[in-house]
Length: 353
Image 1 (cartoon, rainbow, N blue to C red):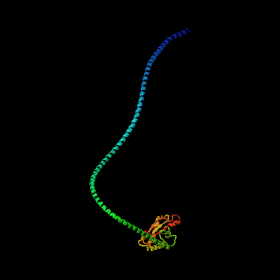
Image 2 (cartoon, one colour):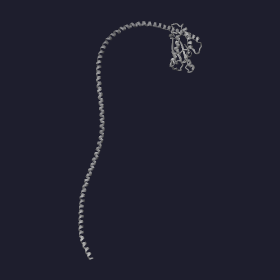
Image 3 (cartoon, helix red, strand yellow):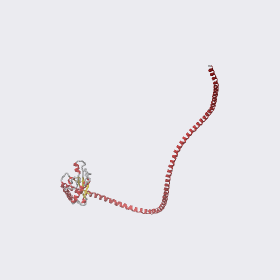
Image 4 (cartoon, one colour):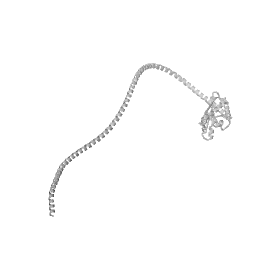
């Protein structure tokens, strides 16, 4: 046991110095590290302080650069806006330049045309001036001749006045003679009117005789009557409906009328210019055929048929006249069948040309 204790005590004494040395070395190391750390902190503080100052300077520079950038951007925007404005103005200026150029060309063309017109007008005026000068010369010559002619006319006027005085005296004598002749003319007019009245009365007497003979020949028939100074045949007596050809019975009726006319006309003096006027009339109902396109053709054709028959019977053509009146002179304005029958007629009128 004593050996063990001695051995353990010897062992503990051997370890402690080494431990102390180790602790001393460790302490020295820690102190060195602290010194290094302190120095590092010192230098680091200095470095950080310089860095903060540098950062402040950099921040100031950044702020200045930001302000400059903002100003640059604003200037850029203003420049861009100015560029757009300038571009618009440039386009307007170019358009205005083109318009001015076109106007200038048009005005140049117009000016050239005006110059040509002015030159032509100048030539024309020069020609007119020459013509006017010639005309003035001619007018002067005409004036000179006119003055000479005036003198001549004055002499003629004096001569004419003398002649007029003589003519006035002759006119006074002529007026007296004219008054006497006018009295004779009035007297001749009265005689002529009296002769015409006598002729008319004489023709009326022969017409009355002619109608009287017709009345005796044809009898009192309702379809043949006297209306005023006309002898009226209903169309049915002479013509078939829509026809202008005289039938045999119609020719027999007309032959008696023509015979009476020839007998009476033989008594009419040659100085009475009489004619037998034959008028054709239709009713208001229209007709439209190849032969008679309208009532005018039908009424005229019927009157012509009677005239041709009278010529065949020996009446001179110069004593006959034919006329067609269609439906324009109705005796009855009604629309009944009896009115139509009365309006379809042939009228014979002994009258004077």
